[in-house]
Length: 560
Image: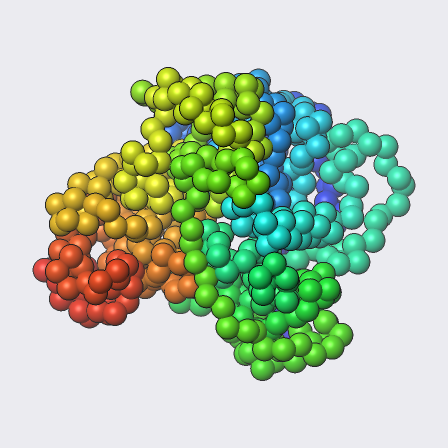
């Protein structure tokens, strides 16, 4: 007897191509939506949330939770114009909580949107020619791409491919336009030749880059694409499948995985291969258990020989094995020449949150710089913002304006501060087990002090903090992963690499919040004393291994 489909699969089947009762519920007033509407809203770019800081007290007083909505934008490669950015900045005040948040998939999220403002906010975003459509849900999400603003043939091709794929892979349903933009219904259900009537079994992530820029951690995607060049000439693309970092604590059948390079294709075969991989996942992904519905489980359950043979069938031909490649992570922060006589400036944004606070009025500074100089904008996978196309004669004025508002330049920050990532976690994310973004300054400051104590302050190191095990800031693909385990406790992962080509392993389980930083003291001491020249922390941990590292930690809580 076939296994029972998950409830979300039934909902998609009955939703009339993602419409459901969304239009009626949004028009009905109130502060929240039904469970079915909650699931369908994801396809249109929004998650219903509530303020978890106030929930318990409000319940004790017989009050409803403070429901609100997160809204995420689809921006292939993280690009937007100056006019679009200024519009988003205004929207943060008129419809949201006064902040903009850069995601690690190069989008922008608005938080704190009330139900009555959701439809107007989406309509206003569309007025800028950007969209929230398919920024969430069981479809291809925002296409990641190298954010490097170098004006050369390689970068030009990557950006063009990202825009093309983003448009090509959007669902064909008109539901979004009818519900949020008041388009008149056409009276018939649309065909979805790529997705089919129930779309994909789970979210599907795609990233495209070249070897010189793996800031996107391309191998963490369901489908990773690496363009290979000889000089300025594109020779083709390496195709890697089965990446994904989501997992569940104490469930060994769920785990993070990096994508496996499986094929090399020619310059004109990209769309055909991308569609083939998506169709394979559409037809073979698990629709009965959403925790095992990603492509990575199809790859592991069925095996690479099956994967190659089956993919060739969808592709409609044979393909070469993936070619050798070496991925690098460049420094995008600070001032750089673009290659066309203009400059770009990479501005660090702590945890991706563009907001005014303390001594730094980052949001005001960016607004004034963008309004005055009209640069291009690129959001990076490291939650930072790049201002592009700056005239050399404007460099001093831009720097002075940022300094006037207390924005600390990258060259005055530690490597730890430049590369640390954190997810939003509490109080808005319903999956968070404990803190992440709100402890970001504590993590950065604590690690900085510890590294300085061991003479390591100038070493490049990546630390990624999440409030739950789902890996939303690519937690398991850097030097250090700090993963929410339960309220006030974290699991510690080490042994990945800075370049994003090796997964970390769990070293410690249920470390109290107050002991997270100090637990690294003997590890950094050993790295300082016994690390090979130029050896990164993750590389050192991988070489020493779990048992060797645990031997450095008196009374260590061994990984479960």
